[in-house]
Length: 205
Image (cartoon, rainbow, N blue to C red):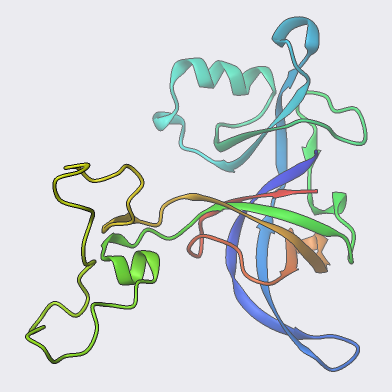
């Protein structure tokens, strides 16, 4: 599938033709530069590598400097491969929001906000131990029992417990493209997408 790399700008809302208020997200998508062409003969698969976002020359390794120089572009911060494009791409070509059309549906991939170490109520939606009576004192948000005693004498793998939450790769599917501002490289999609403002996202067709 083809797509583009972008950044999450933020959320807003739009009114449709029926007067319904639709929550939506603004994405700064591209322009992206084709930095490499993968082929079946050389790499064993076909793909197009796109680069997005300007990176400092001093923070770019020598191998990557040569990689970008071969494509005739400046160092990029984010590189992503896409399997197919409707038309043939060459090194140095530019991909922008014009590959999308208003009304079509896209998938958006991003990294969810990190929540740090969280308990079972926030992480898994536990209901708590129960009422505040019967000697509960200060353990209303506790996870409760973790298993039996003499058998199996251990905690089963996969037990829902407290731990690190967020910071995961998340894909939201079937978001409709509501508006495209080609002159500003902006695309507006319905609904919410993962990640904080300014975080990188991948928009797949």
